[in-house]
Amino acid sequence: MKGLVFCEFLDMIEKEFGYETVDHIIEKSDLPSKGVYTSVGTYSHEEIFTLVTKLSAKTGISVSKLFYTYGVYVFEVFVKSYKKNSFLHINAFEFLNRVEDTIHVQVLKLYPEAELPKIEVRKQTSTSMELIYTSQRKMADFAEGLIQGCLNHFNEKAIISKEFLNQDQSEVLFIIQKSL
Image 1 (cartoon, rainbow, N blue to C red):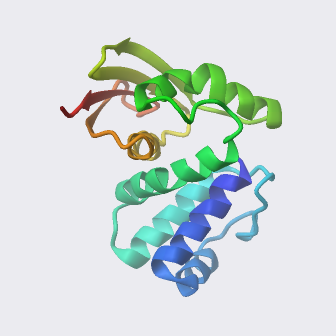
Image 2: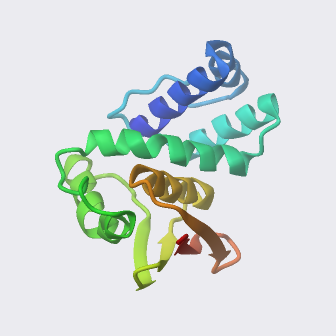
């Protein structure tokens, strides 16, 4: 997992809970990286789970809610990172339709070793979208937060529901229904 994800997570924690909390969760975690990340480095995704779990224990906020909140937060960071792409003048559904063949393609050009989730649009109308998220990292709450961050970015309202398509939660169906 790219270090940018870790750096921005620690930045979010510092903004929301203070530097002491960042220091606390890093100290309480036995991380191979020792909690030292560079945005271009690559780290085990297990480290983000460890950090989120420690933050959950410290704050009393569920792991699920923390991953979701982080997804919402980091969407804007990703938009700024890839601003040169021409997706800024479209709507949320068009953006989500382009993740796999535009955004992920650009990420892989920069980071060929990146292991990205697969995002497949299964069905779409003008008011609803079904997409399937597939990832061995099983970060569906984070993905849901990214979807919400996308909707927020385009100032669109929708209800997002999710259905796990297999027991290990590595494949998830998201149904996004725009509010009228």
